[in-house]
Length: 212
Image (cartoon, rainbow, N blue to C red; front, top):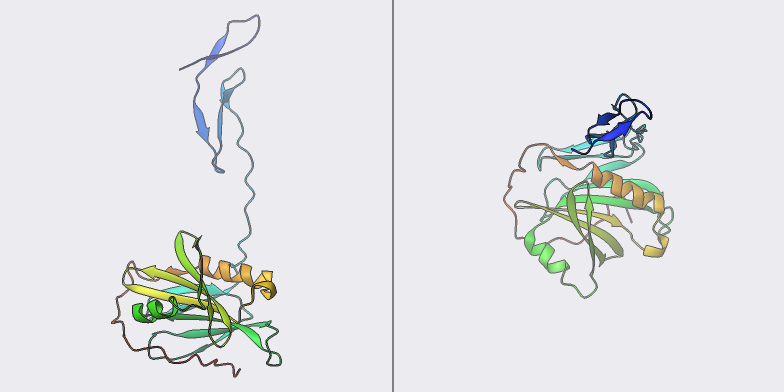
């Protein structure tokens, strides 16, 4: 150890070069005549923007996530998914239909369907996005309108999340932030998701449950 000396004109006292790890990840060393650790920087807690949100739990596919309290949802059914749910964000989308709002859809996807629509010429692959340790593939898909898709692959399960409609130059920044926050709260309610039999049936055409 390399000593530090203090106390001019007196018997010098050596401080060992130890380091103390602070709560914020930084480190401090010993100093002063008593060789005490320096005071750690004060850590200010960052408020959790999702603290007051509601929690949606899918007991069939064993996952849950938080969503804004003002959002509402309807359960849907298709031939290629289980636990399908569509949220009305209440955010006006500027679509052709009067008062149309953005919707956020979560469903369980099949490998065959995923392989089909990701190969469309009208599908644009975006860089992957890692949120809270989970890696999401991202795509812009042209269907009845453009929508932004997030794909999460976990073991034998594939989960699909998408925002509809999606136009990059009109996508509200607050909605983008909310989607990232929702995905950051996504978690499995059991240690390993149950591997439900995956249907190979082709997807049925998208039907918006909110009537447009």
